[in-house]
Image (cartoon, rainbow, N blue to C red; front, top):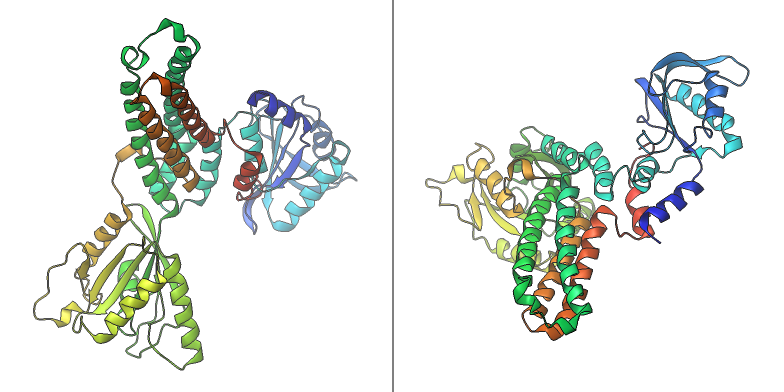
Amino acid sequence: MQREDQIHHKMLALPPIVAIATPPGRGGIGVLRLSGGREGELLSGVMQAVLATCLSARHATYLPFLHADGSVIDQGIAVWFPAPHSYTGEDVLELQGHGGPTVLRMLLTRCLQAGRSVGLRLAQPGEFTQRAFLNNKLDLAQAESVADLIEASTEAAAKSASASLSGVFSRKVRTLVDAVIHLRMLVEATLDFPEEEIDFLEKADARGQLREILQNVERVLQQAKQGSLLRSGLNVVLVGRPNVGKSSLLNALAGSEVAIVTPIAGTTRDKVTETIQIEGIPLHIIDTAGLRDTTDTVESLGIERTWAEVAKADVILHLRDASEPNAEEESVLAKRLHQHASVQTPRCNIFNKSDLLSQIPESDHQSVWLSAKTGVGIDLLRQRLLHIAGWQFLGEDVFIARERHLDALRTANEHLQTAMTHASENDRALDLFAEELRLSQEALNSITGQFTADDLLGEIFSRFCIGK
């Protein structure tokens, strides 16, 4: 069954849904969104019951929202979007009233009551956007970027999510898929007509075409890595002995006093997290308890949590006192870091309190000498963090991306690399060549949802907020 037929079948079986689309709490306005049906019938009963009128398509109408007995719940604006010209591709009704939680709950209850006969129910998280995907209003990458735009923590991340929503990422993926399909067509045509004895690899320049596709996949993968950084950022964990200046460094990076700083050892007993941004990249800086042997129960718990953060870290900054950089305790701590941290986790030695030295040593790719107190070396550390993260400024080419997108691109790349191996042999390997191309196309199609398992869809949309 083709995807379009599957979608049509699913859409016919879906009941109408309703949800409050604005965040919980009090505000100037609150929005209730309803979606369902394609014939203008499923929600017409709700309009008649709650609004006592029918609305003109795509026109805002100011009117009262009514209880079952005709009394007024609220007054606001109603907008009717008939299918298919709506966010979900279904008939959509939006009611915009005052943003008090009580009045919105009353209006929600009234709509559910009025729509009971047609099966109106509360929407699940992300269900409006899921219906937009099922109805071909958005592909899967665009649908995911809706949530990414809402959750963007930096301006750069918001711009990149907006680019994905407008289809920048999807168009790049479709271009790759079209190139793979074209090559598949040539390969499989050769498999179908072996009697022609055409030297396929040479005459069709299959290796040249495949080489170009591989280069383009690598380019898109690099762009996607940057987009993934913008979306998720990095967890940067500060570790070190007590009083080496972890909290001072956190404050220096954040530009404010977010952590308590005292000369008393063991002041920080639990993690303190602050998100900063460097060139639009969100960095989650985590200050942890000083690592030492202690009999204090609370401090011991803090140290246990420090090791837990080390195990999850994307980057580890090992802080040392610049005035005693080779202290015996540091070598012991370095060994323990090696035991608790992943071997793939990048680490950088930070020598703090360099303002106490008569001459500051040169920083290198493994270490940074700085003073959290005076700010000397902080800018260098920021740039070092970007380098560790692998950030490269790509101008307007950056789009938001998720880990699953990176996995799909890596999988496609692996199959294309294997296809190149078969293409480098002889025509007897063309069937394997064709299969690797098919698997590569399948991996790429999973990004936009042309080939996506239902359980993956459920996982993706369940992470959305209700009402979106």
